[in-house]
Length: 320
Image 1 (cartoon, rainbow, N blue to C red):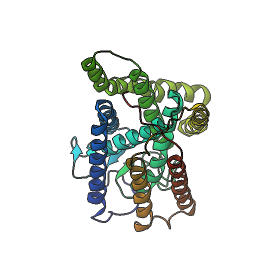
Image 2: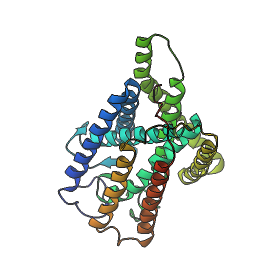
Image 3: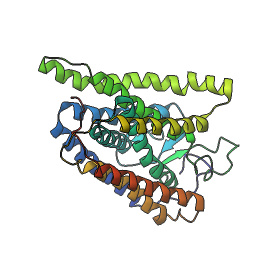
Image 4: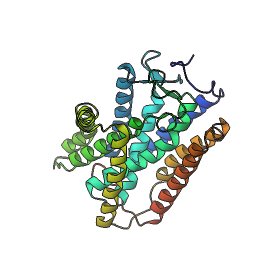
């Protein structure tokens, strides 16, 4: 049974959820093993992204923020207000591999955080439209009469606020973690402890910044200027690329070994896996505009990562 009355499409094929979850677990293990080889800072940053993702999703679902999850093997909480653990894994590997890429570019702090957010959004754009139709997660359009068709509401059934939230979460976590990592300690033990604690502190500060952005600031913008999620998303989609381009013009590049395979494997899996389900699930025939934008986002993602892997790189600096 679906959590909302007007959910489109039927139950996905039985293989869909186990396959999706298994692939996510494998990617998580591969990413964690790579981070482990790179040291405490890398492991802490990745697990911080994992924990931050779980925390955000759990709080939103329990607080009845307007969406629910489908039932996977590993779930956190009690149905129907529970969340798949693999969702947190997805947050962790996307946030971590995005930073591996931005660190390798030698970007200034703010530009690097902006680039992280855009890389993460590129994956989310490929994923959410399809995952929604596979019932991996559901947004409650039934209680919003201004959107009678859940397949065309806002971004083909995905709220603009979801994408705005992704950008804010990744940008805040990346920028605050990078800032805290600039604190230096001479004692090796103290330095290791600080590296381990930095993601936790980053999560706490990011949570405060996110709350201010999504509640008091959002209320004020809506009341004073009638600015809502769509307008805020457009603003960030204009601002973050400008910051990123500025950062690339200011970057310092050092020659080093090529980027690790995870920096192309993770985005490749997300983009191609959900693009495949766009056709396997029969969703491509639903809306020509939606399919066009799915294809466009896939090609954009391929172009960005192809370009990234052509440029000279430097070693990632997480926790250094």
